Image 1 (tube, rainbow, N blue to C red):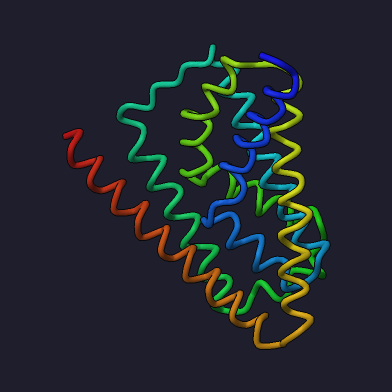
Image 2: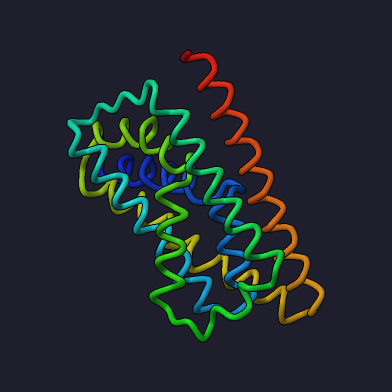
Length: 197
């Protein structure tokens, strides 16, 4: 495969991981209402979670079988997302700018590592990525993620700048997305757990 081909595949894989609506983008959007820096810092936490998950998939010889652990993955993800949704709805997220970048980053990292979408992406498309390998593919993958992490918070900040109503709407929608995915993942945990009995 040519270098250009590897780059395009990497960009496509990175977009498939970072762009779709989901819990992490909801949290990045909510953080971006506070400041562009908070949004980017949150995005960097998400990228770091991807790096950790990618390293785990690669270190485990490119094959991971979840089996009976899958319901636990969903249950953990659901619990963490409920916590983050409640934070947003209570308005506690607005106090975060004074708490520093490390806490903002750490929360995003925790959400990323417990997000079933990210975990399962790395165990499916990420496994294929590990098999294809190549530094150019890696550059494409994380390049696409970096573009999203820098661009998405900027778009949210622009919306907030144009109207104060956008800020509240983003926070409410983000909390609803997190709560919705928490319910979905919780249901999957129950269904899969019952099926394994």
